[in-house]
Image (cartoon, rainbow, N blue to C red; front, side, top):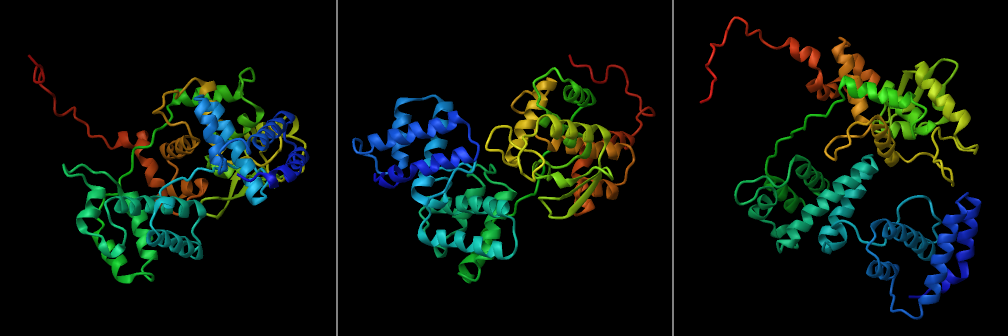
Length: 410
């Protein structure tokens, strides 16, 4: 492995990290790692940075240590090979997903789909999800010995969705992603894509019941957010109250700007990440006070338009992926929902707001406006927990008395 470029230029990397506000300890970790790689490169049979990491794997089984090593070595590789500086994003030298394993014809389908999807204005997150599932679909065919679309059989396709004993293996979303890929790729191979589309089995679109917060859990959350003696930061409290009292999505909270708060009019103004539509909500006093406390007592004094920043330098806007961690900390402080099977994300706060409004007789159209839904029909998913109106639908069985002993079991 040639490390001459790294040897000559790594001081630029360290200088950039100092200027960006990285901690001295983190910079020291990079310096030590780089110097070790340079000194050992001529003595070991490394061919790539993946080999460097595998040396650590051979000598350590501690997950946390290996994760940190992976992140640092991945960032060093990005700088050495691509002149990219650290940006707090995960850089992996490991091949992920099925795409790298696909034969050229199948890879070309995924590439073409991505091009068409971007031209049609699909979100990158949607393109990634559909490409990932479609790659898995094609790789499964490939593992069955099929390397060309023209060779696909009905038996091979159906076996991916239903086992020989009739058990369902894949669901509606998996089929939908495969369908989106094939529809987009019809111009590449019209006959084969249309044939494969016709072979996809029909699947039922089902939705699991959404977990909901009980009244006791909600009170515990409120108490935790107001209790200044627990370990929650002011940032956690401000984010938590935004989620609790406005029902905003976590991604929308993470991307809020300083200008999103109109203090004079007590209004929150955002552009929704999911739909791109603008949304205005009233700024409640308890939410405004929590945000003000965070701004004046905890937010780093840096020139950054984002409302919520990382608490450790370099200070950047909050990553939407960190919202789950904030919610989990709030749940832990409240002493609720600590089992692995229990939902902990902020969407459960959004769900609670919707069901509370429904229970109080607010119309679905108004609730859709508050939640920023593009269609009132989106609110229907919350009806399963509208216990006030569900109970009103129950039939009175007092006119049909059950005789004593009818259900006795010997």
